[in-house]
Image 1 (cartoon, one colour):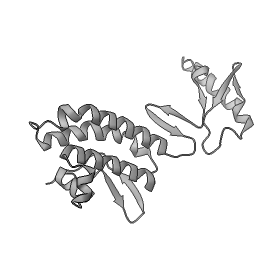
Image 2 (cartoon, helix red, strand yellow):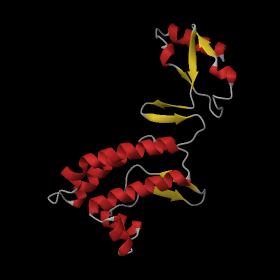
Image 3 (cartoon, one colour):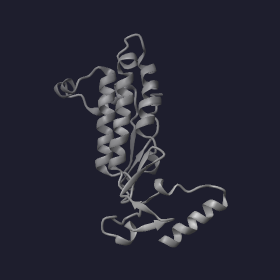
Image 4 (tube, helix red, strand yellow):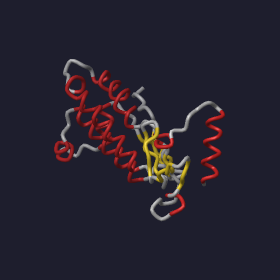
Length: 188
């Protein structure tokens, strides 16, 4: 591992770049850092390169075990902040049409929620969290409370239809995988 790190450093310097060793982290896919002594003791230029279980890269959480739950929770938190910031000025404004609200929701909230999702290996639990958040946002825009949805037996599909949304999450039943779609299709 030390040899690979020194080769990386030499290649970086050949290109005229500088490797910031204190900012450099080591993530080994599938190997827990607390059990691999040799991974924790990686030295480069008399500095120890820290082994981490996950790290943030370009705004996304990269998990050493390939999991996405931490990333999904973070994307939901960011999308929730975006939705909250737009709730009063846009989504509750009676003068704006539902079509305008739909476009703003897709452009800001969904873009934030699904950023980087094309690289996720999705599992049922993560998809469920995304669906719950999406349904909560649609109910908020339409002015339907959770209690009203339960009392009037309004399904999530009906909420999506009222919003004019084909759905954010599409399913491929043949391969039993879940595909996240970037944009909802408008009713034609």
